[in-house]
Length: 195
Image 1 (cartoon, helix red, strand yellow):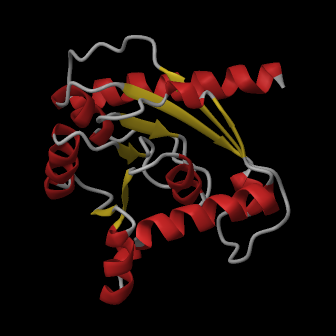
Image 2: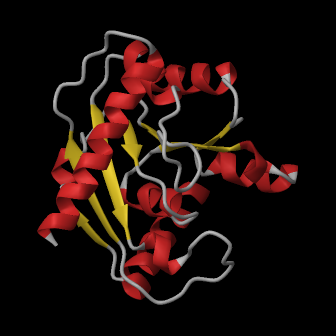
Image 3: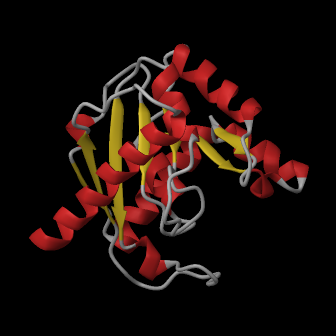
């Protein structure tokens, strides 16, 4: 109940105040598991993607889960704590179990906002789980709520979903993560050229 109310409220706010537009929604499977890999440019990104994809579990930095009462609320919103900076096997096993139980999972391959290099987590999940991989490209959130700012500014948000070209599951999780992140970066460059 809490999840549905918060998700619908977030979607309405983003649509009305920030002109949220969505492209490629037909790329999202109507049911079953998939990995959603997205660029990460603002703290708004999880809220944006969570509001447009139903029943999406989100890997989020563990610092957000403190204090414990706030952490319990985030868990109600399908957030899964992830330790950054080192391999978090607990979070990866949780995400893998969700995927194997037909739940979609969102992961930001670059880790923190604006990261320049992929982390191996997305490669691990893609290698181990035989589920579709969907790419998401979020734009506009970095001007509305850039790093260091507490309150949003006016602006427009857009999300574009694409299915990936076939990505080889061979190699290490890091090598696979690099391939996935390259596709996300290429989709961003292509969009900038079109716009």
